[in-house]
Length: 127
Image (tube, rainbow, N blue to C red):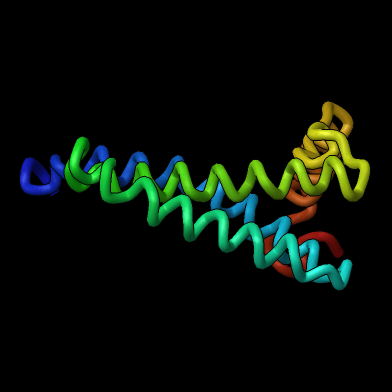
């Protein structure tokens, strides 16, 4: 797109990074639906909303348009931190358990992925 969109590159990169805590927060919130405990889900959304409202104006004053996605990153990171503390305290999960990736998990994904790729061929190719 050239130079016309050069100013959007930084904003897009911050939005890309901001998506990580946003997605993790939503995964945890959806997972907590099965527990029947609505408080941490509502509180996490509230933490994100209040934090965003508190930081977006000062960040926009300092960083201009880049302050808005930066505020989104901070707000969703705060909500994610709240949820991780909740999981650690209430459900006795370690931070490592919350992350979910361990060497055995990566190894298992690798082998299953390879098996899927080997089995994926034209329809009828395997018999």
